[in-house]
Image (cartoon, rainbow, N blue to C red; front, side, top):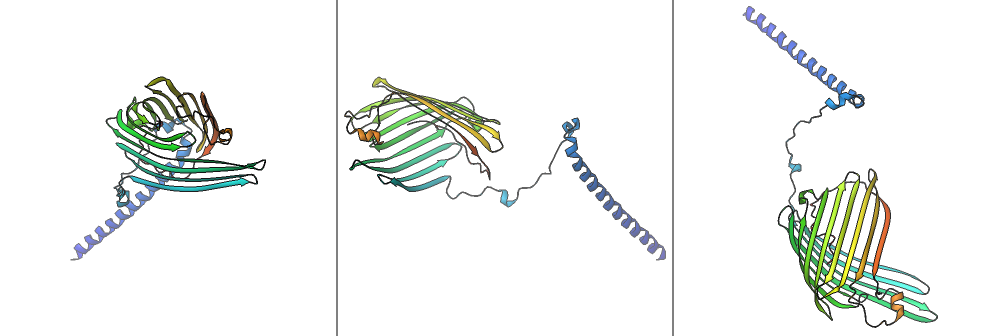
Length: 326
């Protein structure tokens, strides 16, 4: 019994020594690790940085990492309305705008619906004479597109609207379209080069015709910023002289982190204003923005700065059939 107890005491001593050794080794490892991390900022200035490899231990997915269920199934509804008014002693302006948007965007399909009703009224008092200019616009538009492959997509448009400014009692157009993207659609966040062919029927209050539309869109996103350019041509097949050619470009140049310089511009050559009123009517309607003037071209340009900060929430990106005027 005495001999056994003596050996048992030796074993207990060895175990205590072993625990002490493991603890010292762990301390030394942590010290060396801290020393290595402290030297990293000095190594960035040397050639040794090319040999540095940073790894992280694999982490099992937690319950919070699982994608949350979407009870709306990608449907998004936007209801908006606003009233604006301003005036002077001899001028008052009142505008009422209402809009309903319904969207559903996934990687394989896209549905956009937009319905609106806008009313504007200008009243001027000139030389003891009151001039009223009232403009009403309402309409709706729908787009549906379905992805066939990484390069091909098919869809269609519907648009109907009324506009006093455009002398339009009511116009409707239905046009299926086919799109081809030179680059795979999985790369659209970086680059895209798309052709869209659109052929449909447009009905007006005074004419029925077939309308042709072809659009080329080029977009590029790089670390320095992004470039978007589009070229669109429109032609009425019943009268080939009725044409319109439109070019647009948007450049966003990254100056600093979050600070962008934006350059926008566009030019249209117009020869298809088929809705112009035959009678000139009251010139005040043109001067006060109540009627559309005939023109052979229009252009626009802008330059500005934008600063972006805060949280970034990435959603599904589906650029198919964008920048198409239907």
